[in-house]
Image (tube, helix red, strand yellow):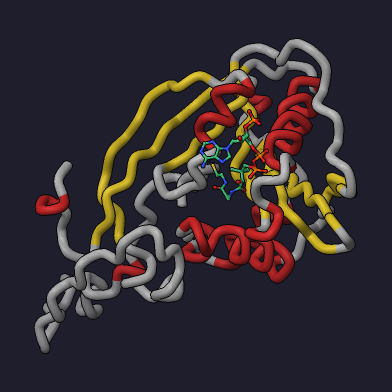
Length: 236
Ligand SMILES: CC(C)(COP(=O)(O)OP(=O)(O)OC[C@H]1O[C@@H](n2cnc3c(N)ncnc32)[C@H](O)[C@@H]1OP(=O)(O)O)[C@@H](O)C(=O)NCCC(=O)NCCS
């Protein structure tokens, strides 16, 4: 995929889908010094969740929860099958892991929807420990057959090798173009400066065509288009 082929307003992304089909061997990683938790944010409020998600995700173009219907997100957070576990350092939230048990009864699948650290907490060994903690917590439960996690090329470069070392294997990869959330106004233009901004899309024609039911077309409003891909860890 060369730069010349990237459509205006879009970014190329590579998503890696991974799974772990057996419980980890060996002993658990020791908890790094100075960490408290993980604490399950029971009945996690939308505001608290968005604080975590937005602060952690902005440097990595995490956008799906920002674009989601916020009522739907609040309902998802109220579901006890979706667990947000938060770690603290020096009294401050330092990161979270989101476990999604909703598919467990159907086929034994559990998903790590998100794993992320606050920018100031990166690179101190917290991520590998938190992942190990989450993996072991999942496999403690009966009927678990597989654990999934995704990562994409916008994520921190440590994520993919970290998951591989933890025992996840690559299932498949998908290359696609996604709307640049900064161009769409979903994230600040200055977010993730290491990822070059997409070329601006040409201005919309002055009179956007009406849809068959007479409603104005949303084609010029990328932030209102359907999500580009499903919301799991590593999907931005
Ligand atoms: C990905 C993330 C969870 C890793 O946690 P972390 O605490 O920063 O990483 P750790 O300090 O535990 O280091 C993990 C390993 O990655 C290695 N690593 C660090 N930087 C790296 C880089 N740029 N490239 C490859 N490996 C790297 C470390 O050497 C370490 O290896 P080791 O376990 O053999 O010592 C964390 O960086 C993060 O939350 N990033 C932002 C959000 C994100 O991208 N989340 C992943 C979504 S899928």
